[in-house]
Length: 354
Figure (cartoon, one colour):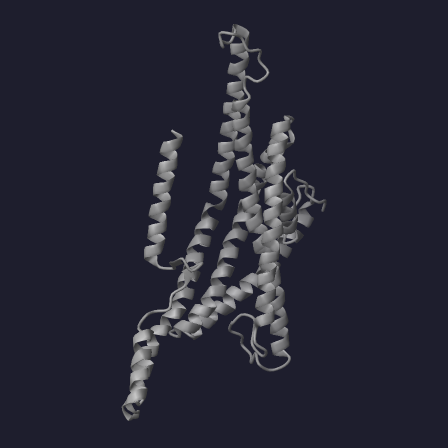
């Protein structure tokens, strides 16, 4: 297969990366080659992502009631479910997404104005910089995950019909999980970067539409009365119509993006929220320390130790909380406050612009 080209470097890299997983297959493939690519993509998904979803779901069922273990397994399971939603979106909406990318590609390559080329180059620079920062961060997280796993344990908890602590089952499962983590993380990074890059290209097209309106009369001769002649009115009317058509085309691309990615983003946001809540819930056990202190034989302790236990119980009744940079706790009230403040700020900016 030939390498896909695109005016945006991030779109080019991520699309070719997705093709390694059987997505965005080329149109020049024969029917047999297409079937092979689809089968390869399905087997790759089932062998890594689907296998994890099955084994982790089985572990949750077998350990039902153990909230701590269910929470730990649910974190990784939620990540795989999010990736599955994105993969299914790219598979079933492949033609629509490819069409949006093609339309954006044609429009950006047709730009001849120096100011327009500068806008495109700035967009390309921003998306490339984001990609270069996002990839090391994501792969660094995966590397830290693999290296920090205690010896003798699996990278991700899952149910297996064998003893995972004995050789050679432990080494085989560990190798499978390690490869799966790297491959799924690479695909997740590629899909996220592709989605953000497509949105950035649409934003660039909107800037080009704005530039067209700003410079609509730049090449027309000015007169003392600041009025257009009859011929100039015809020229301006034609340009306005062309700009409106281009603006409508961009809005249609944005609607296509919405139709393609809205379901996947809903799953992503829902599961991300559940992961954050589950992580925060794990700290709720800090309040159980007070009960544990009371359960000890404190009545046999001297008065000094009883006072120390009382201080511990008072402190343990205050729940441990996660904070965002030390500024705000991750609570429902904080989320509601942020949403209210964001909408108020948006309203102020909208009124100011009007």
